Image 1: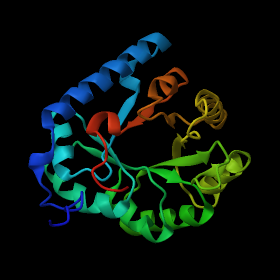
Image 2 (image 1 turned 90 degrees about the horizontal axis):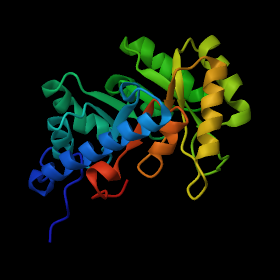
Image 3 (image 1 turned 90 degrees about the vertical axis):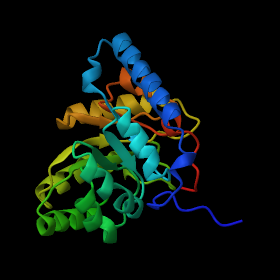
Amino acid sequence: MTDPLPADSPTADSRAVDSPGIAANLARIKARIGEACAKAGRDPARVTLVAVSKTHPAAAVEAALAAGQAVFGENRVQEAAGKFPGLRAAHPAMRLHIIGGLQTNKARDAVRVADVIESLDRPRLAEAIAEAIRREGRAPALLVQVNTGAEPQKSGVARDEAAAFLRACREEHGLSVAGLMCIPPEGEDPVPHFRWLAAFAADEGLGVLSMGMSGDFEAAIACGATQVRVGSAIFGARPFPA
């Protein structure tokens, strides 16, 4: 038996993609977003669904695009660079978020391909992104990732360092930070994490809050999320390792 093609391969088997299933899943998620916004007294137009397509083939993204989804999230810059240029040429309104941890040596690639980088989390990366923006002449929107659970294995700036890091991004590196992102610890109640991030964003005058995933996005919306990142509930189980 031959090995399966990687998810970002242009020749990955599109016949394996359940296009009607993806469209139905998107409709369900959007309905749930609408219901969560109604309960919270919020305008659903102010909550962006980021469809996390990591490790899924370009054909899955095409199915979501055909169903009206325009905003996608990828963890790895290499995968995004291999998957999205062709899709963007055919769908110029689509937007791409880099949501995974970003190495400094991939900063320029990320600036080239992304509309939003959600994982700005340390001074060296801020410096690398600032230099990449100067060289490339384009500036993706930037979100600072906060490690609200102080998890040593997880990316993100610590809570007690976040304010100083934001100042450094703005004053030392000349970066315009649009908002914040967090991933609460698995198995914990996410609501205190979402509430803390929302309060901190308000203190800092930041309008974008990326928080909430497949299992907790409704709670995130109740706490003020303006972006929710949903992958498996749209595309199903990942066909390849992350």
